[in-house]
Amino acid sequence: MFNRDEQIKLLKATTEFDIVVIGGGASGLGIAVDAASRGFKVALFEAYDFAKGTSSRSTKLVHGGVRYLAQGNIKLVIEALRERGLLEKNANHLFKRLTFLIPSYNWWFKYYYGFGLTIYDWLSARLSLGGSRIISANKANKKIKNLKPKGLNGGVTYLDGQFDDARLALNLAQTACELGAVALNHFKVNDIFKDEEDQVNGVNALDTETDEEISVNAKVVINATGVFANKILKLAGRKKKSLKIVPSQGIHLVLDKSFLEGETALMVPKTSDGRVLFAIPWHNKVVVGTTDTPINKPSFEPKPLEEEIDFILETTQEYFTKAPTREDVKSVFAGLRPLVAPEGDRSNTKEISRGHKIIHSESGLITIVGGKWTTYREMSEDVVNDAIETHSLKKKPSKTKSLSIHGNISSKEKMSLNGVYWVYGSDAKLLAEFMEGDSSLKELLHNDYQYTVGQVVWAARFEMARTIEDVLARRLRLLFLDAQASLDCAEKVATILQKELNRTQDWKNSQVEEFKNLASGYLI
Image (cartoon, rainbow, N blue to C red; front, side, top):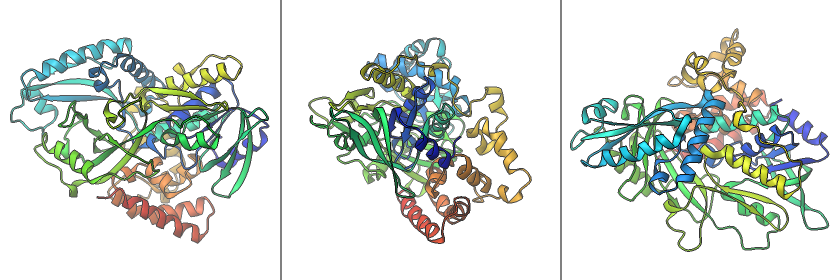
């Protein structure tokens, strides 16, 4: 059952787990699902909330990576395209096929990328979403009406996948629990235990809501904390030089949908400094990004740099007749990619591989870093296979290639879900029944958005939401879509959570203050 109190009871009732996972992002949750589906006893601890970090701050794409193809990284592209197809089958409720347009302002440009995307289609094999096309300038302008017409000689269209990252993370946590795993948010691992042979055999987990500490025994401990992996490595007493993780910051600006009329996304394969830029319709808004900026020290709430914001606005202005300004930005969010640096120059993060890497510590701790959302399932399978091999666990094959994720529904069923409810998938009907008969649950949180009081109550009771941020950033996506609107709702959400979670007035006041401070970082 996906209920925090019940999960804690199960945690305390288990003498020893086969696998303990530290980190509740894409990698950690994928590992928990894979291991639990094989029949292993699994516990996962997330210090904040599921997908609090990088995993809720992606470009919202499930894609092979046209850029990786241009770099010649065929292996990563093939893996990603295969995983894209599997995700469409296993989490269809969150997956959308999206048409992308690469505009051409040089006579050779559309033929160059047209050829490259033909290879992209071919590499997709039987899991292709549809073929690419070279189109005329007239058709390109019909696809994206406010695309600058001067010098436009056509373009290339292709299909890729889009999803809601934080909702997929939540659904993976729910799936893991349904398979028998323990998955807990707001539980911080603050110590790692070792046996007399100096091998890791458990963790100490702190419930940050109650300050209760629980000792957890485990045969295998897996560090899936992304850009913070070195903290756990040090906690486990790693003797070798710490892992060279280069956090690369990527920011996104969120604009009104009028800046990208229609349902076609824009893809600029090479900007003035060699980056890739996307403008993507998402939740009735437009997400524009991203950047690739090396960061010295990781943070749980990374801040967008002024030059990053200016770069995205200036580049967008090169392509759109309606040019966005800073006043048009509804929200800005930043995420950190955990890139594993090669020897030598680490400043050019654009060239560092997005592939994943498994590291073994002398103590037996397994660490997974790198990778991206699209390949989370394959990464997770690799890590569990590695754990079986290196820690002599019982050999059991992975089942996740065909494992349906919580919420999964058919394309026909998905067509019947409207507005903000499509992300719930199979839970949408249950949510509607839950809200039926109580008019107070149908009250809107904000006049400009369809989110309701009932969705907040549902998030608290059935989706393990514990804070205003949990609700407005990741159960609903309002903080990412419109930071000011989320601030307007904070008091109302706090009142609902205070009642649902049986909290004090001081807790409520503190929550509102904390959220105001957080949300201010999403405003320009």
